[in-house]
Image (tube, rainbow, N blue to C red; front, side, top):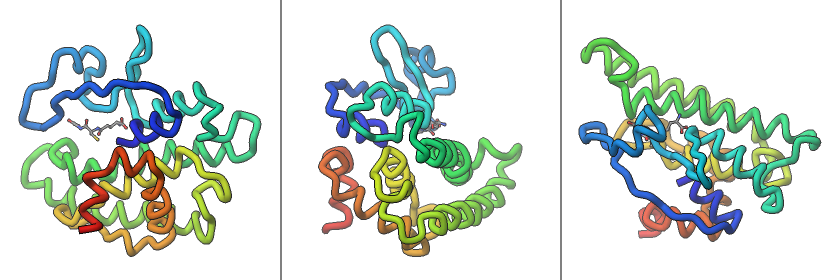
Length: 200
Ligand SMILES: N[C@@H](CCC(=O)N[C@@H](CS)C(=O)NCC(=O)O)C(=O)O
């Protein structure tokens, strides 16, 4: 979803290829050829393909500098931009995986609930770090909107009551940015079914 928002923000034509990612269903061999892990997203561009959401994000921002979704290599904010993209795609996403795929983080089923508990406390710790860093800033980089705000928004949508994750209200600065991002036409389009849950 996050990569799709970025494609919408850039305004390029793209096709969506649906595939199976349910844990209990076999993966399409074509997905496994492109990403042996069997995960999405995978970006196909010409004859080339790449996986890893953070890498795809940086690639698209650099390929389409005209969209101004990232500071360029010579702007001081570039450091902070890379920091947050990597933090989101490694530390924060990993903390979510510990509840969404707890079986991958332990050897026996009876350890899963312990992994899930740690996932919840880890999410609290990591989102608190982000919240404090944002402080009163308008966007995560300060005054300029970037793909890092889209990434932040995407990860807030993964907070799940079903998994007893912390509530977004515990991170008011994160919530403020997520609420702003939610109003962008690109996000309204891509997340229409998610957003309608909140307006019912
Ligand atoms: N590190 C990967 C993780 C991607 C990921 O977890 N994708 C989820 C969907 S959001 C998925 O494909 N899950 C299926 C699975 O892990 O088996 C990335 O950032 O691209």
